[in-house]
Length: 160
Image (cartoon, rainbow, N blue to C red; front, side, top):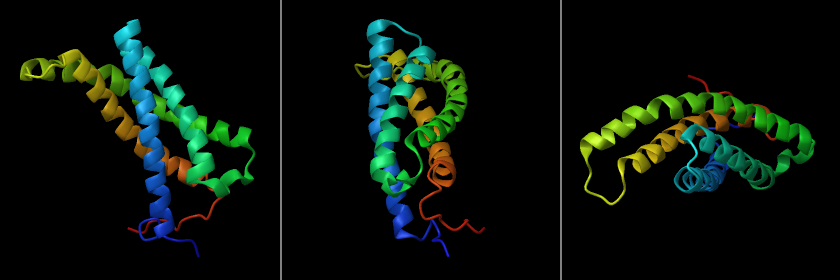
């Protein structure tokens, strides 16, 4: 019988590796987004899309070779297509968050008038992206674990 993901050390380790990979992806995501919005002048939605794709590529490589090395029984092109499909669905979740959450978050930072050297626009863009990344990370982990990487030891369903 497969192990329960909440009690299995192996599944907890996989989740922590997935989170570590996600942190690397987030650094890539935030770095490229800030470069493109601050230095190139792109909108958050366009810059966020480009940075997201760069992070997806990095995350796929790390997850395939480190988080789920035993999942390489599936051809790389098929697994990459599955990973991209999950992440494209994540993009569908992410874009409305970036579009609709930034203005009120910007207004909040303006109202708070924090006495720090960062301006409200910079804070709002980064806070909005962090919110989107957190929500999409949960989606990505569970769907990738049960679909993209389902060729590894399958965890038992969570019983409620």
